[in-house]
Every structure is written in C-alpha cells, then in structure tokens.
Amino acid sequence: MEKDIIVISDLHLSEGIEKDTGKISRNEDFFFDNEFSKFIDYLITQKDKSWNLIINGDFFDFLQVIITDKNKPTKKNKHYELKIDDKVFKLRESEREFGLGTNEEKSILKMRVIAEGHREFFKALYRFLIKGNTLSIIKGNHDVELHWDGVKEEFKNQVVISSLDTEKKDIENIRNIKIMLKDENIENIEKKIIFYPWIYYDSGIYIEHGNQYEKGNSFEYFLQPTLPKPKENEIYLPLGSFFTRYLFNKIEAITPFADNIKPVTNYIVWILRNKLFYLWKIIDKYVFLLVNVLKKTRNFTEEQMKKIKDTHEKKLHKLSQILNLEKSKLMEIDNMKEIPILKSKSRVLIIMCKELFFGFIFFILTGLLFYYFWLYLKPLRQLLIFLILTLIYFLPSIINSFIKPFKKYYLRDKAKSIYDCLGEKVKYIVFGHLHDPDIFKISKDCYYYNTSTWTTVFNEEEQMIRERVQFPFLHIPTNKKPKLLCWNNNTGEPELLKLFEE
Image (cartoon, rainbow, N blue to C red):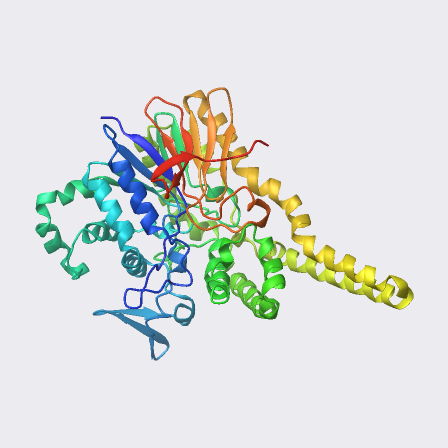
C-alpha cells in the first residue's frame, strides 16, 4: 500500500518535564505532547491509510538541553566532571556554565534527557510505528547533532523503551529490553525510522528544512558539519546556535518565551514595555555573546578544511544515488546556500552591532532633540513628550516594515531556484525553519509550502488572525493535491489552515 505523507517541522523538543518534580524546563518550547499524541491516534485510526510522517528539521533542540543546571559538575584540576548514573563526563568551564558540548557522547546523553522529558510523545511514536507506518526525520540547524550515528541509534532505543510499562528503563540493558519485546517485532520498527541528512526527494516531492539559506544558520558543509582537526569530534556551529547557547538560554531565566517572540526585533521593545529593569541584564548578556562569538569566529584555511570538504562531497555523491538525483543538480542546490557569517569577524561585527549602533544613534538624536525643544519651545513640552513616547512605542513596527518582506519571502525565492534546477519533474517544494506557514504557486504545476512550527509564537502584528498556538501540517495524499492543514485538538480532527491572500 502506498503511503500518504504528513509533513511537520520545528517542534523543538528539549528537556521537557522533570520527572521528580513534574515541572517544565524554562528552556522548553514544546508543551504539546498530549496534543501530538491525539494527532497520532487520529492518523492511526484512519481506515485503509498508511502514513509516512516526515519531521522536517528542528525536531529536537539540543542547544536548549543544559543538564548542568540540575546535575552540578564537580571541579577536577583544570576541568569539571559530571556524573550521570554510572558514567562520568569531562567538561570544560563553558560547558559547566552553558551546557554540554556537541560531541557524539554528550549528544547521546542529551537525546536521552529529551526522551525522558517527553515520554508521552515517544509513546505516541511507538504506537504509530507498530501499526506499520514510517517515520522520516530530516536534520535541521537546532538538531544538527543527528549527524552522529550514536544519537540516531539512541533515538531508536528511546522509542522502544517508551513502550515499556515498567519504570525501569535502563539504557545499558536495551538489548534485553528488545528480547522482552521480541513478539512485537522491534527490529522491524527500527527499520521504519529513516534519517535524512539534508533532503527528502521522491516522486516529485522535495523537502528540506531551509536553514542553509539563512546566513546566520547555514553550515558550510552540512553533510559533514564538524570542526577540522583536532576538534573533528565537535559540531561547527553557526552564529544562530551561539545566540541560543549564550543569550536566549540565559534570558529565558527572565522570560521563558524569549526566543518565541517573532520577529526578534520585537523582543527588546517587549522588555522596555514589560520588564524595563531587566534591560541592562540583557545588554550585558548580548555583549558577552558578542565577545564569545568573535573568539569562535575562524576562517579556516583550505588545507584545514580539506578533509571536511572531501567527506562532504563523498556523502553528496552517495546522497545523489540514494535520491536518484543527478550529482550536478544536487551540487547546484548545495551551492545555493548562504556563506556562514562565522567565517568573517568583520561580518559578525556588522551583523551583531548594526542594530545596537542604530539604536544608540536613535536615542542620542532623540535625546538632543528633546533637550533642544525642552529649552527653547516650552509651550510644546507636553506635545513633545507625547510624540517621543509614541515614536518609541511604534519603533518596532517601523523597523519590521523594512525587515519582514525579506524574512518572509526569501525561502520562496530559494524554492523557485530549486524548481529551476530540477525542472518540471518536481511538483511540491516544502520548507520549515521560518515558523510562518506559507503557500506559493511557483509554476503551473509546482507549489511551495512552509509547514511552520508546533511551538508557541508571540507575534503582536498577527495575533488577531493567528492563534499563538497552532499545529500545522502538510498532507500529501497519493495522486492528489496537498493540503496545508491544522490539527484541532478540541474537535479531534484536522481543519484547513487559515491563510490570508496577499
């Protein structure tokens, strides 16, 4: 039986619920395990239907799994040691403060923590797979640690473990657990979990997360996203990841939904309106972020990156064979990526300081103007105060009027380029990443879709037409036109996602 395709993206599962207290991590963005479980049960109960659920990037948010805030490391000479169960992890000073690094061993531990904080979610996946359905997972920028084979294996193990009724879920005894569940054909379940390192492409359907087309979140070699020697066991993170690690993870101790306020330019204004006395803390953390990012900005030589590049190109060749796509076309799409900002200190300074610079100039000029009018135009003082306060209040809307068209439409342009590359055989191009749902007609027979996010989005400009929590997904039936739908947890059924004409 051919499978209908369901595409969702940007779930951002992180630490979830702490099992001893029942409290939710302040860095968690996904609170909808129950809603997802009901959505999965709905799919399972559809008669004569078999499904391929594609999670298109940022399934997990490894960057927001801290661990060290609940399990305190101990000082050992020039490093720290973190003991989890019977295993000891050696940590750097920065890992003690900001959470574990990105090597395979530590990323496996983070996957385990995510699963333990989202047991209901993993149980739903198990029920879905045991019915013969397929789960396809595409790597994004927040879950780039899925690059490691050990992390993928750990995910499969955790899906199996979630099926147990007993509280004893010992990772080390996973083989024994599989023997216990032999009657339910565990090996067959694991074969139904498929990982895609970049692109899903089949029967004219092209699916990619989309981070490669944003310079703050792109990777130079996405199929081999590691640092060169001697740190080849660590991920070469982009600028956006450092924003999460050094800024948002700390700010969310003050405001838990800091990285959910869209566009980001609205966040500072939200602080000014609601938590003015915290502004200095945020500026302090931003300066700390800038200093650390500049330290990590490295333009490696061609010789240093040669092994990484060669491995990436070998994997590109292998991927072209798997996808049955010409290598030249895959290379053309790969070359459409944006050059990562972290390759240049000057670009980092420009990107990170221009908003601060313009903000500083704005407040200096406003202050001088205020001072002049206050001294020489005394009758207009009250009007002046009103005008300045009004300007400050509407400043984010003015800024966003210039920023938003680029933010919203740049993936449409990339989708057009991909269509031009692949030709008429591609019918549907699907991205995530933006957290904004979208439908756009590229040609007579080709459409672009964006599946948005299942996390909470705070957007003052759209709150009248968009719920802060939506559960969007793209349904691609066999031989029928796709529909961008939304799961309604109250009715227990999907409904058409409401989007306005432009």
